[in-house]
Image (cartoon, one colour):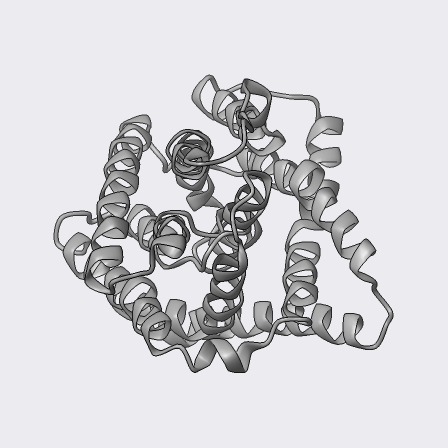
Length: 305
């Protein structure tokens, strides 16, 4: 894929983020509205986008390919976990920040950025693979991620209800539609389409609003964090792309896996850190910096896919 095409799409997404930033700064959208929009994206729009993507012509995506992506996805998250612990050792991260760095290494922003970006730069065929990663992501963050955060927390527990989020349930429904070739009424497809169409705009607005109060300058002075960012969100995805190119001839599959590796730090890690009484400042800063840089890092990465 042409790096210019990817850059065009990433610039459009950045402009949507900038819109959210400006609307907040001008007082047109408040922090309360941002919270409501975020809930709308997580509970309605993103699940709608996941489901409606299954109504596309996915005949080119074989079941064997989906199973292969599932196996690769499991290896992907396990490898990133090991990489996270290595980064902590290599960069001599202070004890109080170690869990944050591991979470930032493992869990990207799949819901708010991964789904709309995959649709924009790879196409609807990628959504089956994204759904597999989304399923694994939810299971892994509520098991491995929560296990890390629980150390020293005051009796806060995770439950099956937490794991069975609207996003995960939508993945299960969408996967069943694909796997069993279920034909739903046209009205269901139309309704899901209305929800899904709002996902990209609202997701980017929320990210833009969240950036408005962040002090980016102080983060940019942290050379250790910047080096971590370059290695994790640029060098690693490019090396993965170079590794996969000769072994995975299917471009859609390869591009989706590489995109999952190049995604900026995910919001859910910060939310869970807050829930378990941990300092989420480092993760919040990571979200801002890696999201801002993602226009460049994802574009550069896709030049090697």
